[in-house]
Image (tube, rainbow, N blue to C red):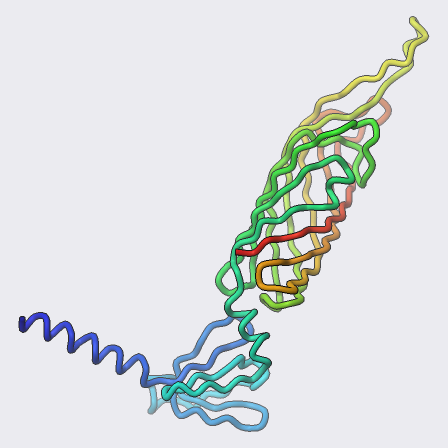
Length: 253
């Protein structure tokens, strides 16, 4: 019984200590500062680190503060409440449906995981080619059978209703060229499929719009290089410059 009351006392003391401090939440990375002696001025806010009340007086620009939560429960916002909520309480998982890839005979889905600070997304795509490769159009002259890879999306301003992102991505998979040649012996044009391994390195730039919490729409432009271990009959370049464009619909959860 004594042991029980001792544990209960420790829990109560710990809770009292935890709630007897103020918190300054930063916009840049959603981190918080445990503070005391907070003094909000016109352009900046001064404070001392909690537990170091005899230490130096520190200052932070008000433009870097999202909100201050005081020990008595009072909250002071330094930006719109909705903007703060979207940046701090965003959904960290996304399933993306790549609409534009249907034009180039690809069915493509991807999964993206956003880190806790909202500054980085790790995306893994899966694409399957379908349809008639002879009628393919797009930024590349190779038909995709299948590819996957990984993309890093950096969000400089974190998460929100409208956000810009950029980053590198790689794709590895298989495909083929649809090409042909004229057979002088039979006087017949022979059309063949040349199977090949595909590697792409792309740098992506995009913008995303989240009208509601569970839905995002994004546009992405990409530029990079493509390597294949085989080439077309009329082209001996294994490495080429390629580009891509994507329009994505995303479910956030």
